[in-house]
Image 1 (cartoon, rainbow, N blue to C red):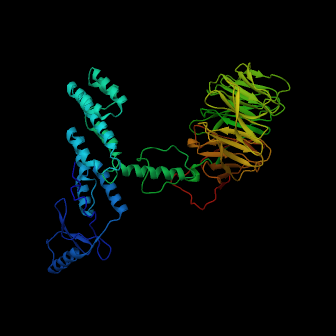
Image 2: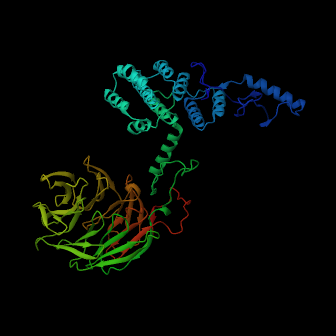
Image 3: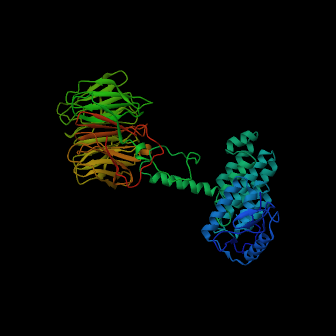
Length: 602
């Protein structure tokens, strides 16, 4: 490794940038690290004494004199930091001569001389010298006690390398005479001692989950050791790349329309432009209008694998649509008939084999369909006085819960056999959490409660001031999205039991409207509305990022495709289902200005 200017006196002034009267740097007559000599004549670089006129030579001599008397501008702390970051990045690329020149010209140093020695000794496997370097570094550290942890990591590497080389006695000496006396992490020492029984080097690497002796493992060791050193002594590894990645991620997070998977690498983005997504890449445009239903469409739901869409209507049918994997166009796959009261709620089983259909308030029946065969597996009805208007699948796919506003709350198997029941709970909407035990139910007391069918306990989770018409839960089970009568869409944190955000714009009376999470990473929220529109918000923003027009009556339900982030469905009292997607033939380079309206027409 190159010294990179680290041999300067630590107390020396870390600056030497020269400033000419016109604000430009001058290096006339200065010798560079690569041995080349250049002069400056009116801003043009020419060779020294090669065909220059006497007048030019006199001018250059004058520049030489002037350059010696011009005061050096002291670099600010942030400027020094940037230079060091650039130097580290260049060093990682192997451009060591460039680093030397940069440090020499700027007067900065890449890292403390003791840190440079420490780095070199580790990479060369000179463990005794590296241990000695720790004593020099101790005075530069904010927490000298960290020296013990650093020494432990260093000796651990030394121990493993001895074992790989077959030097068992030397390794045992390190374990007994150097590691154990540190009295640090005795549990780890017991693990290390077990490696003495490894039959060969490959066995050792496998059990220790270690790359083996050499540059990769020593670089990892150095990365760990650097975390204990202040950045003024040794920069954290790959600091510039980390800062750039953080900047890119922050820009993506703040982008209102970012709806694609974030590539963790930097090769897929340009650092020369700010990140910006266009609304034209967002599901704001009508791609298809499904008109096969002949009455109000009350519900729609994409399957968990995103390949199908189920829609339920007042016309007593459920239509299952197939999503084309390439064009994302939908075509009719199956029509499931016979729901005498109409279909107001649908729930796919976790494996998408079954689909349960519920009716409105006066419906006492529930239909469980095999979607693959189109056959009705179960038609369940416990009592003609029941009202089975909502359903939710247990994550195991073998049970479901159902209930309604007349006080029924049942847990059943796939054949409709009653497994458990909870008396007196007037259910508006249901959801099963991922633990397989807890069921969330909104009731007529303007709240959501958690019910455990195993130990028969229940507790309050959410309390609203107005009726909760429907709710849905995020994939991770942390957030709940509520449609609240006369209030609109509310976001709750189920773990902290706090109201996070109230979303603006939507018109919500006492109709049951179903909203949803969606988009990549469920960063977006969509809801129908009584003003005939679909509203979309970024989860962190109260104001809508898009208002989708096209329906002519109340939009009852929206469903975002869980696999295709750019595909959204909406069901309306106008008898249609609209499929929303990005603009056709979009130019992906086209971005919208910040002042343009977010309202979208079909």
